[in-house]
Amino acid sequence: MSETFTSASQEEAGFRDRVRLSFDLDADICVIGAGLAGLTVALEAARLGASVAVLEGRHIGWNASGNQLGTVMPGFALPLTDLIERIGFEDARELWTLSKQGAEFVRANASDESMPGIGLSDGVLEVSNVDAGDRLISRLQMLNEDFDTEVEGWQVDRVREALKTDHYFHGVYYPKAFQVDGRKYVHGLAALARRAGARIFEDTPVVSIDHSGIRKRIVTPSARLRASHIVLAGNIHLGAPSKRLSETLLPVWRYAGVTAPLGERLHEIVAFKGSVMDSDGVDHFRVVDGDRLMWESPETTWAARPQRFAGAVGRRIRRIFPELGNVEITETFGGATGQTVHGMPQIGQLRKGLWVASGFGRQGMNTSAMAGQMIARSILSGDERWKLFSPFELVWAGGATGRVAGQLVGIWGRASSAAAGALARYRERARVKDRQREARLAEANRAAGTGPRRAPPGVRPRPAPPAKGAVGAAEPVVHEDRVSQ
Image (cartoon, rainbow, N blue to C red; front, side, top):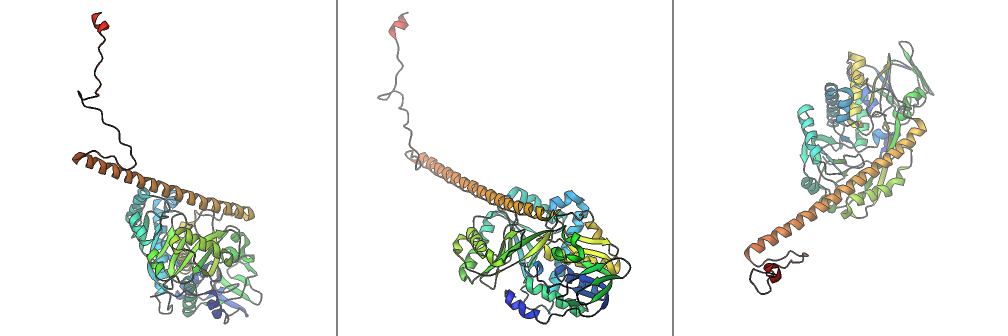
């Protein structure tokens, strides 16, 4: 199924019939935030028979949930080896399994007939910026054998056959990972939740919550709501309802651009049909609308207008794929992801009846789905697997100082990645030159065995020593006076 990129202006047309909460209401569960996590809680809880009200201060998917590339794959922002070191092998394997289930939840929803034109397509390729063949083997073994994940290792030649650039070396291919139109998916998720019985109210900011007692109280500008459970799924923009919670997240804005149609030359240079991301988390891109390139790269810890980054996206594309030349960026978008200090999502019960689902970082499609399912099932059927996230506490992200530090770390990380990549490409060119020189010498030696010895190009021939007894040959000098003595 082909995907058609939905622009922000097209999405605006759907915001005109937003419903605000203008009357007092009782519900089993109140979800604050209509992003991927909040809508998944609403859908799963409604399917399990609960009455659910979702309160959104702006509109559905207005932030990162509706402004991402739609790549869905297992795992977390925290590297798998670090996760094992932090919580042990068995718990890490169980969390990985949950992340796979989250991805399959997204696939099942995206395959629903109520999500036409979602553009579901298979295959995600993670490429390395450096020559990491040795590390690749051990990682493939771990994913295949220990974590039951289907992956393939791609050698450098195969990666460069699919992506015509020398910036990338080895790759890890996830054939069962996939991508969807992220903007259409979040609105399709809201439609599924409504169909299941959840009520979604937009333009309804929460002024305060009182989480004491059996029935919690939520106050909005125009109405009050009571619920047995509250789920905070508002990421960094929770504000008044839970300022302390939002301060445990470092806001990182990621920006993306979509090029003008590039024609057949795009398929000659980017032949891979799925999503591509590099191992350093710098670039993330894929082909949309047949011949346009959607590319996510710049990031900052302060908000800015996405249009400001059109030039940066275009330059980054030209740097990685110089054969594309100067490309025109016709659409830009972006959103803030909430990143935790430890790199893992915040999922669980803060106190009786008060739940949190946030901090999904860059791996939000599968982990938000996992969190929504887990919390809904915990509330309604006693599933306690959310306790696997207990080791990842709520840690203050450092406020303004944390943002400055995060920005500097990001700059340092991108510079380190660029330097490591440049060094790897230099070493690769040096190895190629060495092999070429060795080949010339070998050819010269073969030629010397069947005819006159010829020096390889660029090598000055050394004169052979004269044969014994030949004219001009050096003879031993005998001093007669020494003999007589």
